[in-house]
Length: 280
Ligand code: AMP
Image (cartoon, rainbow, N blue to C red):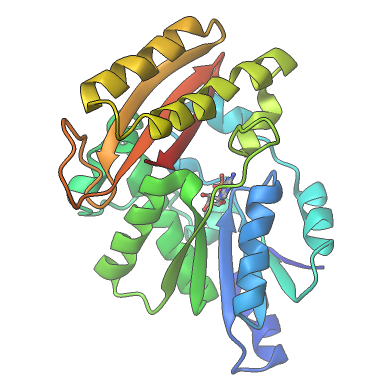
């Protein structure tokens, strides 16, 4: 496997293959799981090669302990990527190098989509995401970049970022990959105890129940149903449950014909923050 810490070396290696080859890019923070691998497989199927970045981005964390405890497993990650068929390049930069010495966020005018949910609850998060994604896209210069719907709001933010920065890349959203018990795969799941891992199924079960009752119940009734499910859970503490318009991400108070909606959850299992969402 080709692992690069320096963007110049990565670019030379990519150029050495053939200038006309298309690159599919998958930015990650490592501790890879099947969710990440599904993005890389899609990138490989639609391009001549894939670049996977592995970088725990300090500027998108609003919680120092979360950043410190974020799992870092580069050797394992590389071994997992080696199981895939195709040409994969790993880009694992140092923060100072990627950020040219100043590890700080830029500020982006994403508009209303950044003010909802994660934007409200994680101060500065999307500025950190935008800063790192913009730096990475400029270094890697992919034709397409792949992002999971697991972070649905982030996917919308990245689409907006590319528009704002006029970056010549197509952003592709990929479906959520789940554990057998329904829990959305996440690098943070590695920090859950066995009991928390089981209890956390309340997140996907509630989203599914809301989806099944979406036609029948009103939005306030669905919100109450979700809140009740989390109140019943001893190990999982709800931060927010929201039904939002899929296009604007604005909280929905009632259903309007022609609009599509998604349920969004952020919840804590002890110190570990988990998010998930589902189209309704
Ligand atoms: P992360 O390493 O958590 O920053 O995630 C890197 C990329 O993988 C992001 O685009 C995520 O949305 C995506 N991703 C993470 N978990 C999943 C999952 N369970 N299913 C699909 N995509 C995922």
